[in-house]
Length: 168
Image (cartoon, helix red, strand yellow):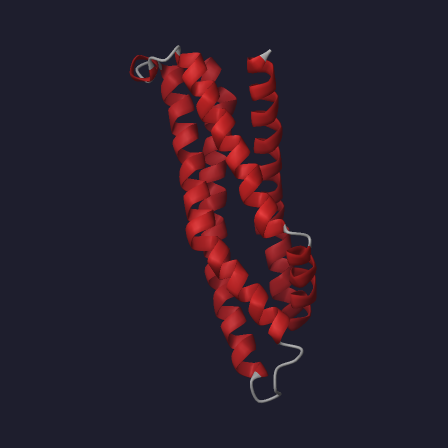
């Protein structure tokens, strides 16, 4: 029963993590960039819905259940399991997911939070300060987009490795 619960949590949270991140990377962030300062309103709405808190929690559930599943599948002999093609595939997937989490949370999240804070300050900023705030938001948006592409690539490696691990 524990394996069923772990696998359910791992697959569902992993699907949410990759799916939400793909939507954000390929659709939402480009739409924000196109909308310009008006996109800050939607970013604020997402912040109020606690997306910056929810996404890392979903990622953590994915990682914890994945590492637990790996430990159980290896029978406690992770070194020996890593010598098998299946073990290596799961290992590459787990490492890619862990790197995606670290890059996303430690590097990307502060950029996103700063950008959101600037967006919230824009409507009440003095007219003379708005061009500087907008320029800083554009710079941060570019950095965020680059980081999102790195995280997305790592998540796609993890997803691919997990999808084929049992068949290699």
